[in-house]
Image 1 (cartoon, rainbow, N blue to C red):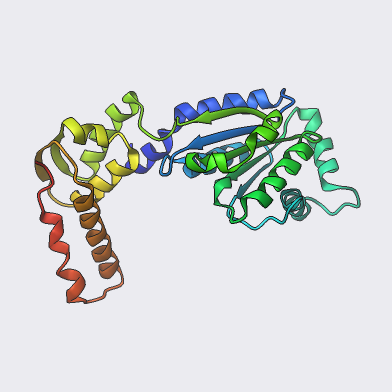
Image 2 (image 1 turned 120 degrees about the horizontal axis):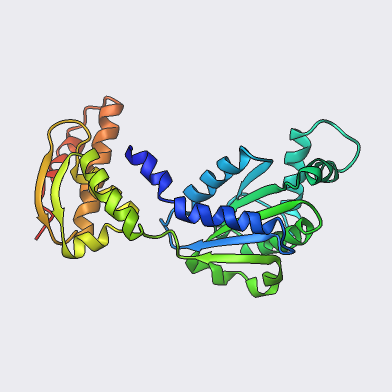
Length: 275
């Protein structure tokens, strides 16, 4: 198993729950499912992976909150535009045609909207969401949305709670104990790091992104293993400085630049990080 494979498979538990919810949504009067989590928790990765898997079974559309949707029916118009482009020309409404195609098989159009909090005009976008969900109830459409936790309260979600089947909160942010027991040795081996994480460092690396930063900053995918000894604490400022320096050097080498100012900063990666 490669690191990139683990980054996808770590969502298996939540994705299994998502599949169950999508199945429940087929029988539910409420067409929407919402995923709420902290920044860096993997919401976008999950939404993209879920959309790809959904597309193998039926019609699927993936949208992003940062796109510009004009209130009050911007989302509805966008869905109709996509379906009009994808389906054979017809004089009737594309949704009506799609409903006719989906009903005999008991299937639905799955619409994923990632990061609704990234809209620049949340009040206007919320109007689009409400009108879209009301409209979806009249068609064979099921909707999954994601939102960053600290922005969820910017939405007046209580007013459209009757359109939401279920909300999942904070189930992505950290590795589960089982995932972490598999991920930690996998990452350390992949990046050729020989160390023992203990105390605060062991707890901190439960966060997938921090573990990845740590490994990319101090590891080496090619070459001899790098011994770091016992690490009790990870100093974030130093970690990000080293990570930044390494990335700058990688870009410099990739572009074949010869800049001594950049090269001189790279020795930061030799700094000791543990107490």
